[in-house]
Image (cartoon, rainbow, N blue to C red; front, side):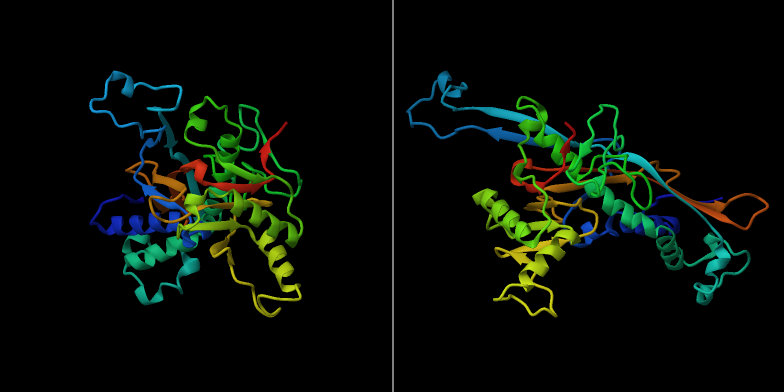
Length: 357
């Protein structure tokens, strides 16, 4: 069996490290710079949140103990809450015939048997990229629409939308079930519905600018204006602040702008991906009738984080013959992934998604 183990400076490690980077970065959300990825989370990462009340008080020569107590006027209020990244296991599995790719690696034809350990590492890595192509789409879809436990989790709280043709949060993607961790939409809905005394609410509440369906370009424009007005003033000049939407809403908005008498662009050109000077990022995977506004970036101050790790140190990726009398091989990769929002009070959304009932 040709099992690839992670080792910082080994031949096998070179391939596995390349594959892990490709796995978490080979999706639209990362390529557009919308998510911060935190690798190496074996079990749990705490994202602390500290909130302070009024800290400026009257000047006195010598403060006494009363100055350090929480008062009715809001002085000395201190709240501490936590959000977490807890990557959950899932597996990529595929069976294939190496002979189907003989032409591809002909310049690197190995001596002896045609098996992976005889191939150049660069060819091996590229080959693995081809084998997990659908994984890219799956990760991208799950970042936005995954839900731990699936569409009908054990708590019975299904997430629904006003339109039946919308993506099912926690449903099926083209590559498999989106049920292993909570994505952006599941996190937002849980935050909006959280009790005011809960830890979830203590980390801040997402700003809901609207919850009606957006089926015309004029409605999309009105939603963008409403979100901009609801955006905290302290964020408006932030260079990383941007709008995120899907192609369905962008197409409506682009057509609406092009149909105006006074146009921003000719009909043969796409309108600028900007609103109020901020980037409008159009991606695959985000749920329909949903627009998000926040500091989406690859940096640590992003409002969207992903935690990722190998499921096990010793059996992260396996490439081996399917059985002794077969020339087929199988590819198996075990990973752990989770997604969470950071500083919810700095995120503005327009969405029709909510808990059923």
